[in-house]
Image 1 (tube, chains in turn blue, green):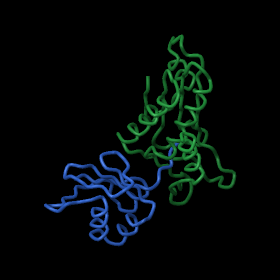
Image 2 (cartoon, rainbow over the protein chains, first blue to last red):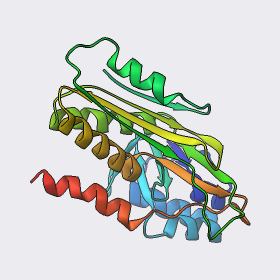
Image 3 (cartoon, chains in turn orange, brown):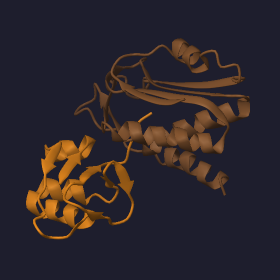
Length: 83
Length: 154
């Protein structure tokens, strides 16, 4: 699946976009976040561990843990500040 | 009837307002809001803002707020223009325009759309001219303003 990062999260990770392959495992937004945190090291733990992190699946914000499919687009970003 | 534009360049509020009416004789009221990059007297080094967005989702999220506004108030049309990229102090950032038969719907929908945009549209500002160009933190007062509309709906 495609994983996107924005704003301060993107900057801390030094990564705007990546492909994540879950193999045959069932993935949720929460297990994806944990997998990225454990793979990526300290910056990833810090950026993806922040309590106010927002997650969107296929460009819709999800407030609870959501099941993921292999062709989903998942994004992690900080609270929005437009306008 | 409903449209959203994300663009780097400036816009002309007068032309946008005229286009919103566009000869529709049912329009009795148009409410418009323009947001600007303001200076901060406490931090004179601040020269501007840079705005990042999530292409596709930003447009979709704002469009959904226009559709929601049209279910709450009788609207003729609604339009949002939001700039992205680097902006200087004094530049326009965002424009919201709403047309309706009567002013109460136009005023309320315009404010609703702006409050919803600020708390749901994936847009992020960073401050230019300050060390490290810091990202702007989300404001609790913006969340409270947006939450007001949920309460009024009960």
